[in-house]
Image (cartoon, rainbow, N blue to C red; front, side):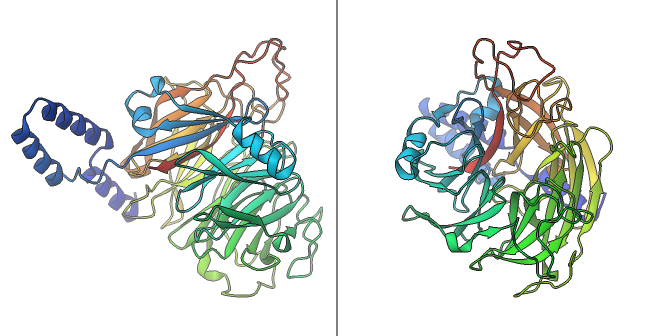
Length: 477
């Protein structure tokens, strides 16, 4: 175990357990109602002395079920998920209601299949991307009210807000374009900056090569992004392999660095910056490459302050690990750090096919642990989008269903799960380990004779619950 891991573990053991804070609060309220003011005062002093005063930040968990036409948004109170996971009752929002009506009004078309939900840096707004259409919806998070709907084109696979909250990038996957939306969350003003868009199918790289080329980058459909903390560099993962780093503030957006499919494999999802490095993963979930799990790190200081890198595959990434043999499909990548964490946390790479989490120490850039999620709680959880509580003590995972509507390869079933819902992971040793401790089930009754479009191994009518949770994020209240 590295010195960095040992230090994080030591810090974790000194932190108060979030659930204990909740229990102390309940005891104090009970004593108050009983009139035991002196005891309450003593307990209050004890709470401060034990460090309990700042450990109980309230939060909620937002998750998208892709089933149906537009999809459904479930919002859970974080405390409810921790205390009694299976009985947690969410707020349910049919995205075919007010959200769809606003899109009809503002774009003339209706959104289909909500896929990802993200928050801006200030967490004042949720951003919902619709993968079967090009719609991006901005919702005021506190009121759950849709404020704007923008149609970027063919397909809004994922949208990521810049850390400075001035813009949003959208991956128009099948359109093979990256779009930028200017954002003013305080004024609820959002506009598509058409002059900023870059076409990854027809562009030319700084070295003079074609962006899309069968031998180098055979399919430049953008999957998602990692945007650095300075809000300038956007790491764009590509479906067919290879990667681009964009100057996302330029108009039009320009390529800073280019990578081929031999250097960075395909179908990664997003990136996370920790300790001056951008970590980017690669996965499976394509017909040509249904299996895979790779992780790369890029030193941000190696990129120029302005202009482009003239040579391909530079600055060179470090390959952290590669697990392309066997049943692997890495999808989500995240930091285990909560909102107020003392350090940047560890890197988790979530493998929905293997039902595992790979744990990486960002300081050493090495794989330090792998832990499984399958067991008593679920024999086949198929973990997907993941996020952590503000205190970093719990993680929450969208668990896929029997009929995955996206990213499942027929006959491989890399995204098929047995228990659709929100999984709760108790984080141990400050992220070195974790344990799936409960599931809040999501049920979306399938119509009679339902035939899952991504499954040929199940007869029509055999799947009665069509729920397919995918996008998930935690929001501090």
